[in-house]
Amino acid sequence: MLKIQLPDAQGKIASYSLRGEPLAAAKPASPFNRVSFAAAHVVANPLGNGDPSVSADIDWDSTIAYRRYLLGLGHSIAEAMDTSQRGMGLAWPDALTLIRLSLADGGPANAARIFSGCGTDQLAPADARSLDDVIGAYLEQLAAIQKLGGRVILMASRALARIAKSPDDYIRVYSRVLQEADHPVILHWLGEMFDPALKGYWGSGEFPQNMQTCLAAINGNVEKVDGIKISLLDAEKEIQMRRLLPASVKMYTGDDFNYPALIAG
Image (tube, rainbow, N blue to C red):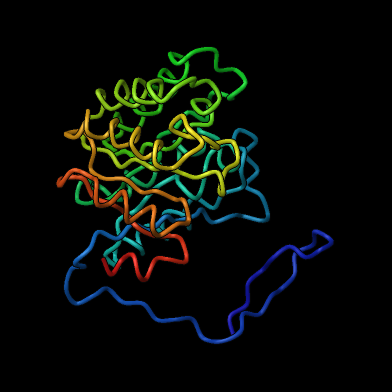
């Protein structure tokens, strides 16, 4: 029986026995017929790493080894995403370290299989004074990721949700940021059920109008958009939007209870 060391309720390290046998996973005999992204988390070091410059205790070697394992199973990596829905997880400096290490370990052969989260979390929403502040924060992260040779997932912005006054403001920001993308990006529309600060994202309280605004941002920059993932926990909304996307833009599905039916098509 496998045993691991974990902190107990008193903060002391204790031995914990895992029950049952781990599931065996092997690389498939043939390539997937879908693009599969694994939103891998980091491996925590409960004993601490002793480095005061790092805001989270992370076992970097194990974290990167886990990415290597997932790539070996045929998955691509959505890097620094669920790890850091940032503003509630890893801070941007640690997220950038994670992205740098992941890309370096993956090497050129996996460069197109690692997409990294690009957001505005280094800008506190309350500090955003204009759309240019939001654009600047997005471009700072975009430039840092692209300098490392990384591909990008453009994350929703709490600062943009706070400062935007209309749907046109969203289109302006996304169009400006997409202009600077070296490769087509994946957009991530995260709903308020995951982050209340994103309520009304795309400028309206109603899904049909928000979908049209998002589609306008995509259609105006279609050569810069690989695909989109909407996290709204509503199968019908995803189906509606999938049917309206340009033929060259993918709908990425996952992380909710509708996954089996949606992935079937």
